[in-house]
Length: 487
Image 1 (cartoon, rainbow, N blue to C red):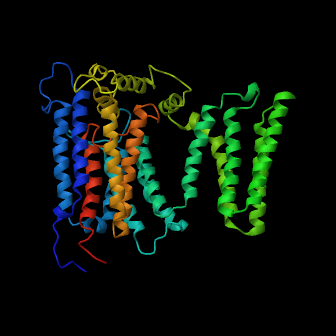
Image 2 (cartoon, rainbow, N blue to C red):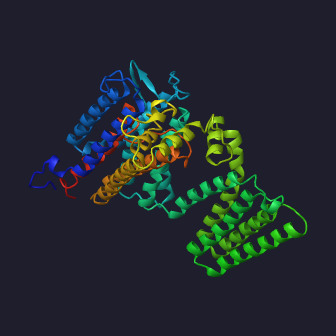
Image 3 (cartoon, helix red, strand yellow):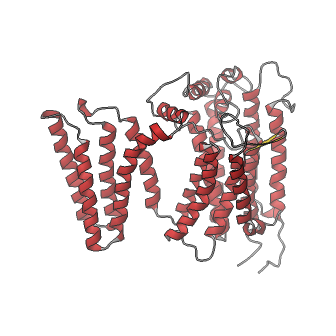
């Protein structure tokens, strides 16, 4: 039923979010000025400079945003799958793009214009997910429905990987945060976190020996974690305290005995004992699953087997599947290699730039590390180092605070949506921004791998700015018109 009293779009739009959007773009432009400025430049607004071109991208982005606000929000609901299909075709076609830019085939070059379809694929995928998951009868806890949603995410990811843009592909994994909000079992999210933990601990400490014995600390800790995680899952999902205590008790007692024998009697690899305990644990879970007919036991068994298989395949993937530059970046991140002249150079120089800014920074256009071009990609992927050098800790904290307020505001808007379509799309938007900010700032500080993704509204470029603008303003359009139609 349509409301009797007409409402203006401008009275319903969330101006706080638009204000944050404008503020972030303004600070981003100032950072690009600082990152691209060379001593002696007089005109920051010239289209021959990056700062001048970014003004053009900002102007077109604002116009694009307000055009989206004027559109009927039902357009995005109605044509979600069509938009998604068109972007998929574009992503697939880009794989065969002959233009190789820094080893990537992710750019479409049309005369002087360069576009990166992966940046626009985010809003298209978010729309398709919102349409699919808001369909009547959809239930993410049914494996068939969950698999359909996963397919919507994985297909564009595969196309982007085919373009040799692994970093951009990983962004799409952030949609699993929205899945969790919409009812995806927390065990799936926990499994993902556990796999990351296995990989980091196992690879980083694989070469360190336990008490100078043949036992690798990395393997020892990971296999012990598998047993403890299984015990916790039995307690949480089966609610059987006796079985939980049995698993923990045998695990700790047998591990302690094996370590003492290893240290004081005959040195040997304790992980062989732990592998035997894991095998016994598999049989234990299988037995109780068959005896009780509880599916939880089989799920926990799958987690345990998958954990061990994943851990032992991680080393193979690192050394035989990943590209050499990706392998070096991971080794540098984990502290296995220093390589300050190679893969670790960008991060090392960005850390120097940020650290030199101190509390208050060196001031606008006064950064030395950035002016002397010590940091590669300092106006794109590593733009945050310019913020740290020129604005210092206070300015950096202020920028992060603005992003935090934006993300929290998006979550608030998502929760007030009367329909599932708007809520799901809103959580997709918030998740994408959260991932980009966390990973980009983390890689500049040396806390996350260098995967080459832009900082929203800060990194130079039209594709990323347009992509983030479309992603955001579609949601603002949906939110502004949330009360114009009543169910």
